[in-house]
Length: 153
Image 1 (tube, one colour):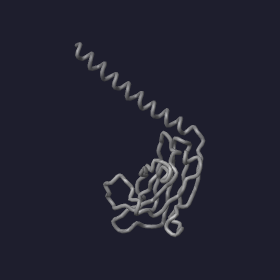
Image 2: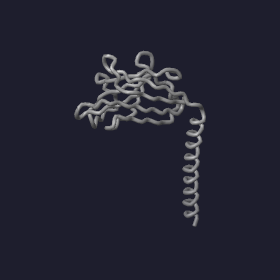
Image 3: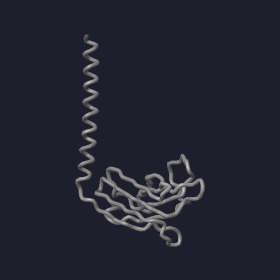
Image 4: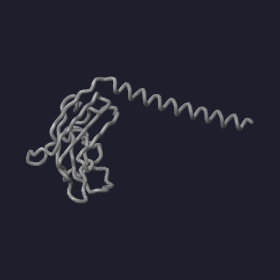
């Protein structure tokens, strides 16, 4: 009987933690969305100044929503991967992968972050399909766009 009471108490406590953690996550996400969004649209610039595609970026400091499009196709056996970069010259050089472009030439990235405005650039690289490295292949960069204020803080 006592053992059953302990198991029941443990299960109730675990359930309470799960419910509370999901409520806290929802509350944080809602508070992140309550700030006004600031948006910008820019060209993804390739070699020689060619327009590789477009970048639509919105943030309120915590929530970031990015839409990238291109009409270009990667080489056979390769994919285009996009990266949010923290200032290549003055920042940490940290690059966060936003994933690969779909075959339709579209990439959507939506995330709640602690500080989305630390990033300064979006860089597109051409990576081997199925690449296991979490790092960008900078020598295979194909396009970039620079983010304006409130980014770079």
